[in-house]
Image (tube, rainbow, N blue to C red; front, side):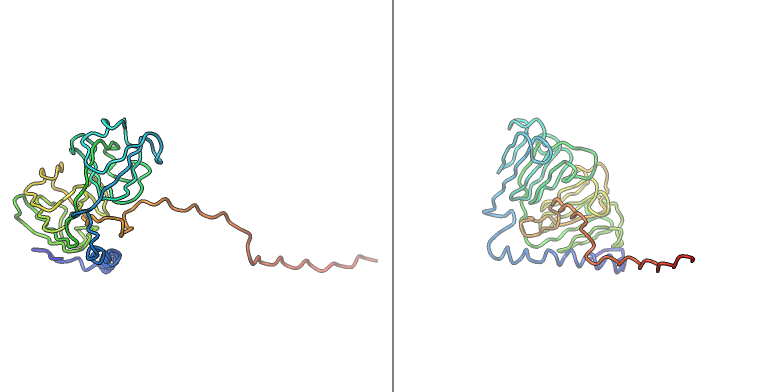
Length: 258
């Protein structure tokens, strides 16, 4: 990772977190070498949309883009299962409005695919091409690829501030791979998808302001479990204490008076 005009934070906790994140996702190049391309040529896509939460109600299956899920018999979308992906979802018809990344996994209610709290609708979606095992992204302070610059290579960054870069990102170059940026640190807030290409102005990624505070790579969760929503197992009921503390001995009986 390179930063023009700013120094790294040097925070050992942050650096350790990033290294662990990277280590969790090292198996992708081997899978790609075996011919299982993530969203590339020959890739298959399948997503199931349900009308109600927890995969209830009417269901529609998609393997290609859909500009209006209402036309497929769904009045609304309450839960999603992505069997193969990834996908880009939108809260308006025709691939417009707020964007949501849908990677392989289960999404039992709307707040599992977005935490921006601005929208709970999903009205259109399309397969998202992940064209490369390698990832490179350039972030710029000003429109037109000017001002301070940050380069990110094969890494996820939970906080731009933590690496000496400000939250103002007004233009972006996605040189390799597909990325998603977030308005707030820790991959929170509104999401912005960056497929390979140049984005000269924040309007190009439909942002209301030039603000991004965290970015990560988009990968098919078939191999990378991080990012999938899994329902936690219920906590087991408490059992008897296997080694209870013995009760204190009773005091000795005293002899009665004669």
